[in-house]
Length: 179
Image (tube, rainbow, N blue to C red; front, side, top):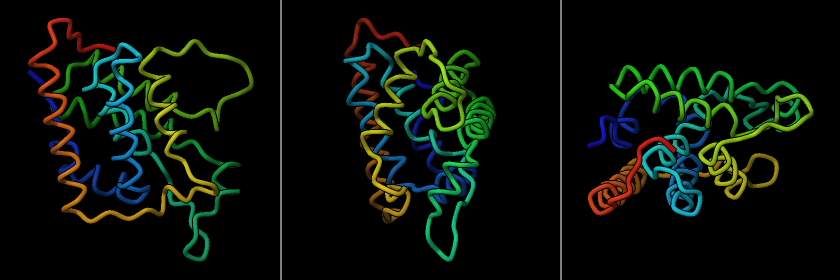
């Protein structure tokens, strides 16, 4: 049984505010891509979807004259650091287990290398999956942050993902939450 669903996250004012300003359409697309990749990577589709939905929850508004200032963003961005903390706090407050909240938060933290020093890290499959789902949905100059989506369409897509994850959990004998 899932303690925290995507619908619970989507409805939360923190998600509406911070994910909404960084691009709800993009966040939902990354969550959908993450679920689609979960089996290939051998991770929980539940955790993949949560990390995908929340991956940009730490974005600052990098707008200049109503347009996303991609150069300023690339030079000064730490959204993954802020997002990891914000995602962890939100998940724990909603009742997610501490290990699962941590796994999602670390996937949010490591979904981008825009702020990391040179070198290599050994990423978990969940972290790799979220980074790939995000990269696959990106558009030049940050255009993926501009895509719009109606509240009703967003809600329907979130409900569909929750249903898909619930079906997987009910039918998978090898389900393991931590991924």
